[in-house]
Length: 121
Image 1: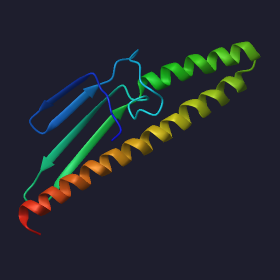
Image 2: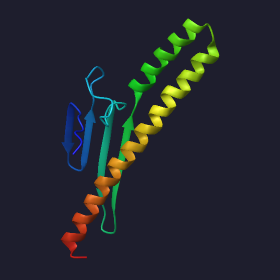
Image 3: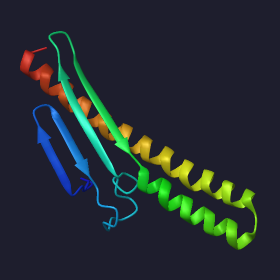
Image 4: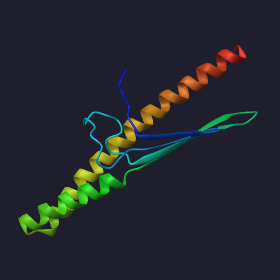
């Protein structure tokens, strides 16, 4: 099982929030690398269960802005800076969203299979 790390995890009622430290050391393949914080909310209704998930990637934006600005200054071209920002931030954002969509899908599947076992369906 892949280890997913967040430093400050808080669970209140049907809500789980987490924060990942800005300077925390995580390997690049860790799912929390591009994430600053997130919130998972499980809402139970008589007819359906809704799972809401929000993630924030401010650190990714800040780091890629600094890196692309430096590349633009070194090259003397604003276009280079814009290209690297779009590529670095955009690609990492897409990968982060895809990986976390997969994570939340796994959580939803486990909730669904557990509720089916409890209802006997």
